Image (cartoon, helix red, strand yellow):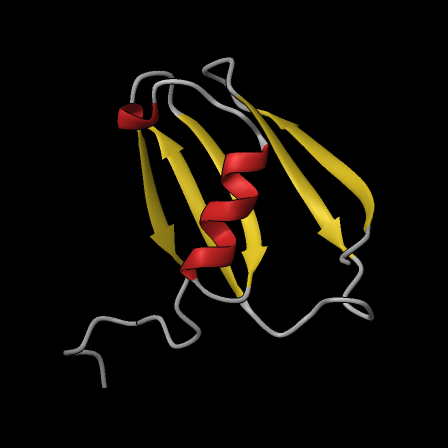
Length: 87
């Protein structure tokens, strides 16, 4: 089980509040980060999971209603950092 050490709270100029959990990497299991985005309220939920099935199981534990308002995204380990035309 992953342990959260502490949370960083950032307040943006538009009034949004960002919560960034700091993960104890010593206990982090191999896996990926999945983000669930609520399209109605602009809420993002980040989940560490081993596969999409486990990510959805963890999401279901939260008991959020209106499932049709949520989309799931996966963080890739090799994301493009530069424009492909940069040399």
